Image: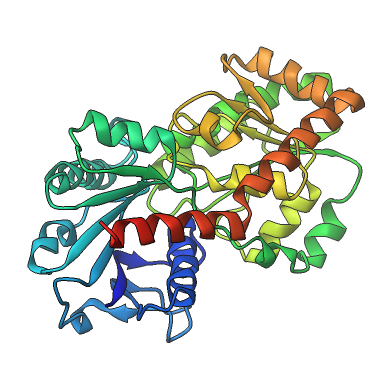
Length: 356
């Protein structure tokens, strides 16, 4: 029996790509013949990471295809041609409403993505959702097959590499560094992080904001953020990193004093777990899957008013006993995302599916 994974694009360094690679290792350790297949494969990945979909042949009825769903693609509508058992891993799709003011292409892609999710509801036997929020969305869309929650599998060992020395030297200067990590996209609401930082800077002028993430494909939104930052007089204090090396991401986490998330749509939000790993206190707006991922840790806000958020940031950074209490809670929550624990959950779920 083969257990293979399928997705439209196998990217380098993104959460879904990393999750797929980690699952490949877990499946192989269970003793199954396994591979990853994709239509597009990032050339920066090792050659044996994934195979082109054209090579996916000879599937038998008892083989298992695990399909990662996170975007709009014709591949979704071709799954019926594979005569085998099918599982969908649902990473969620950003609602198109967020993209309409900025990108026709992104709007169309996400609309097509939701059509694909609707199409698959009677084509798969089983679903794994990254969060309870994702599971609830599938139920609302009419899925009646068994659905279990399986958080993204993160190899935290990779984060123990040395951070970029140049960044560490340049920005370890005593300023308070607020950070948010995530692609520059309207659903991430970087403008609300900037608003909160504008108010926080009135409380602590010796501070900066670092927005880590690529803006490729969202240039219109990025330019609007840049102009907004300039209008607030913050051009020297807000850093847009763009796409950067992994060692530089590690440096920014190492330099961070607080992680501020105002995102309004997340299917899981891996950077929250990363902030836990780096022992950075989290302040996050309570939307979508944010509360699922935090699991009671961090500071979860029911209001994104910038003045309110800035006061919370200030309190967390000044009140050492409170900050240590927050960090202790985050360290405890991080245990739930340990590689071994999530791998064991996945193995139990896969074995249960095979035995049905």
